[in-house]
Amino acid sequence: MWIIDIYGFLMAGLLVTMGTLGDRIGHRRLLIGGAVVFAVVSVLAAGTSDPTWLIVWRAVLGVAAATQMPATLGLIFATFTDGRQRGVAVGVWSGTISVGTGLGPVVCGALLEAFSWRAAFLIAVPVMAIVAIGAPLLLPANRNPAAGRVDLVSVLLSLATLLPVVYGVKELGKDGRLAVAVVAIVIGFAFGAWFVVRQTRLPEPLLDVRLFAHRVVSGALGVFLLAATALGGVYLLITQYLQLVEGLSPLQAGLWVLPAAALLVLVSTASPILARRIRPGRLIAAGLAVQVIGYLMLTQVGATGGLPLLVAGFIVLYPAVAPSMALTTNLVVGSVPPQKAGAASGLATTCSDLGISLGIAIIGSIAAAVYRGQVIGELPGGLPPQTTAASLDSLDGAVTAAQTLPGELGAAVLGPARQAFASGLNTAAVIAAVIAAGAAVLALRRLGHIPPTGSTPGQ
Image: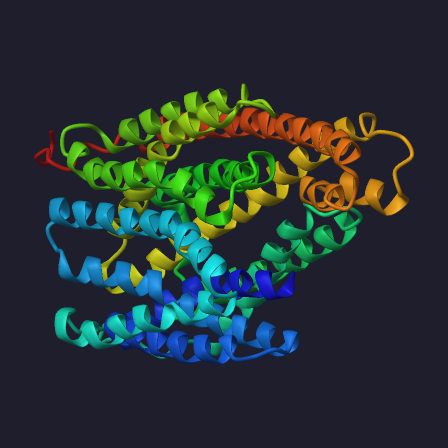
C-alpha cells in the first residue's frame, strides 16, 4: 500500500509549493528539472528488488511529478496573454490529462502482459527525455524577476497540512481505521491553521490565502472539488467491474475506457470555444447535469450483461466532466496576477487530487460496505475460514479465493460476490449523482454571473 500511496501523497502535498517555485525560478526550468529527476529515478525504481527502496523511489517520483502540472499550466498562462486563446490552450491541457488517463491502463496493461511491472517504470524514460530535450527548444523561458525566496517554513507547513489530510482521507475507506483517519485529519487542519496565519504575515507568501475570499476562485475550486469527488468515487469501481466482474485483462479494460477518454479530449477542447458564447458557469452546470444522467445509468448495471450499459454510462458521464476541468482551472488561474499563475495552478490541481482521494475513500468505502452487507448472507456454507474472510473483504479477494475451489463451489462464491459488487457500484453511482447535482447548483450560484469570454466589457 505504501508503494502505491506514497507517490500520490507527496505529489498532492507539493503541488502548491512547486507552483510557487515555478513562479520564482521559471516554469520551463521547473518542468525540465522535474522531467530529468523523474527519468533517472524511474530507472532506479525499475532496477530495485527491495520494497523499502521502491517506496523511497516512488516518493521521489511523487516529488518530481508535482512539478509537471503547475509548470505546464504556468507556461500556458505566460505564453497566451489573449483570454480566448488561453482558454483553448487550457482546454487542450485538460484534454491531454484525459489522454494520459485513458492511455495509461492500455499501455501499462500491454506492458504487464508482455514484460513485467518494471516496464511500467521504464516507459517513462523516453517520455521524460522528450520533455527535457524539447522544452528548451519549443517553450519560452519565463520567471518573475521580482519574486523573493521561497519560505521553507511555509513549505514544511504545507506538507504538514496536506499529507495528514490526504492520508486521513485515504484511511477513511479502511476497516478499523476511523480513529487514525480522524486524528490525521485533525492534525492536518491544525497545521493548516498555522500555515494560514503565517501566510497572512509574510510579505511574499507561499500561497496568497486571500485568494479564497475571491468569489470566482472559491466557487470554481468548490465545483472542481465536488466534480472530482464524484468521478473519483466511481471511476475506480468501473475499472474493477471491467476486470473482476467481466473478467477482462488490464489491456482489454483499458481499451473499453478509451472511447470515453477520446470524447473527453474533444469536449475539453470545445468547452473554451463554447464559453465564448455561453456563460462559463452555465456551461459547467450543463456538463454536470449530463454527468448526473450518466451516473443514473450506472445505477442500473447488474452483475450479468451489464457491460454495454456500463460503457454507455461512462461515455455519457466522463466527457461531461470536461467543462468543470477546463473552465474552472482557467477561471482560477485567470483570476490571479500572472506572476502567481503557478501557485494558483498548483491550488487547482491539489483540489483535483484531493477530490479524487475523497471520492475513493468516502464513496468507495460506502460501496464496500454495501458489498459486505449483501455478500455475507449469500455465500455457501462449509467454506474454509480464509476463503470466507477473503470473500467478505472484497471482490478481488473473492475472485482469488474462488480460483482455489472446485468449479461449482467457486461459481457459488463468485456469483453472489459479483452481484454484491454491482449493488455497491449502483449505490456509489447514486451518491455521485447527488454530488454532481450539488456541484451544478454551486456553479450556477457562484459562477453564473461571469459573462462569456467572447463578450465585450459591460455586455
